[in-house]
Length: 179
Image 1 (tube, rainbow, N blue to C red):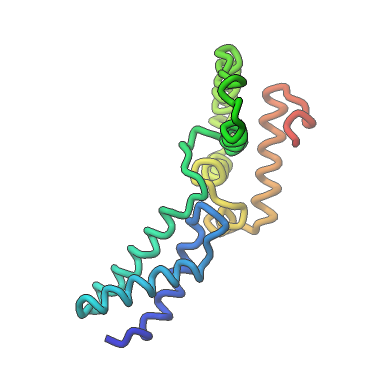
Image 2 (image 1 turned 90 degrees about the vertical axis):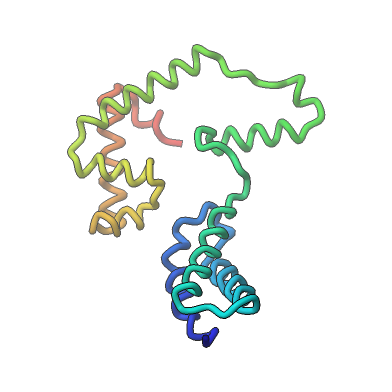
């Protein structure tokens, strides 16, 4: 087996898989390096046919993607909450100032989410798909544009229009939705 004949395959696969990374600290070269290293290791242990070599490459890249989180945290925790918890835990008297969620505030937030969900159900199917791609699938505007066959600008402007419509439907001011 010619080890270098897999380089084009490795780079094509890395280019496709890099969009699934969980941290910007991982790039195509990191995925390619993980694959080449795993392939070299397996080739030293045993001879590989082309099918098995491609499996080794793919699993090495997927393993690198799985471990690409900077910090492991549950999906239900927002980034700002995680950063705040980390900062508090880093301080020695953090336990004395521990913040516990107010159940009324939690209920109000959950109610707002339910209201937004009910408004999104009224959207056209294409707009629902767009919002699903952006929030549930966590795609970027560019990736959503590729999926929907639109330009990035069209996706962005459609997204902004949907947000404005939801704010109007909920009676929220435009300024309250901006940061």
